Image (cartoon, rainbow, N blue to C red; front, side, top):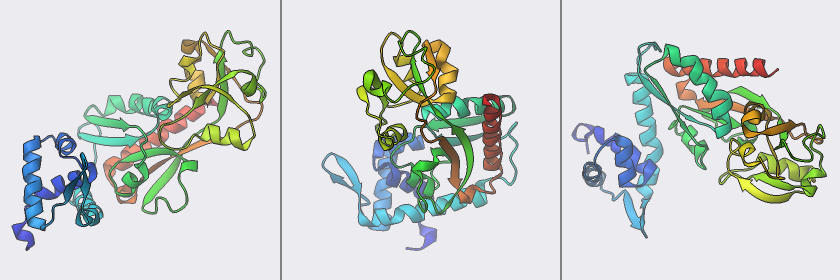
Length: 309
């Protein structure tokens, strides 16, 4: 098949189908009707002489040919986007653009909110879509499927992201948090013994590793686990009127202490600091819009760090 006989618009549909492995979700992402995407899939199957997606039980799975195409198709579209379609300059006051950011709820409070406050007045046409950290975030970064991810350094091993760039963004420490009426609220610190003496609210993300629980295990601190939560932001608000104790990042704890009716206590045995970096695909290093967003994000991080000192 010659390139001139292939409808290049189908590559966009193919890329989305390969990522979503679901016709309806692909249609929603492309802002097309499901019949339109089904028709495009039929054309792709004929042009490439491969079924691409086949039924496996109640879901669709990629054929070996489709699996092999995921990287090359994404590479082609990313190159076109960065080298051909992206304008050579970026003016935040007039240019419309959507950026996708992957970060935890905690980062949403301590970094993305200040970023939005910072850029809002100067970038009325800018949109930032914040997504939760999912199981495939490293793959998404490597494939240049998201603009920026803010991830704990300890979750990224050497060699995980060979095609990505990074910059340090946030450093925080973990602290104890208890209801203001808790018997240990006036102790001045949260002791190691308190975790066995009082019911404990554990940080238990549905995907990934709990750095808090990992460090507590390393320190040999036994816990009387009575409840668990998947995100940091909700945890302080679960404590009022209970005997639960928990651990969250300090910046978050200080921001919500009054509203959640809790007190913040340093830990008798400190955990390792929570260091998080900004990661992006190296292909975007010189993208003017991306450069602008990164600089604003890191400036917001520096301002927040200065306020917490």
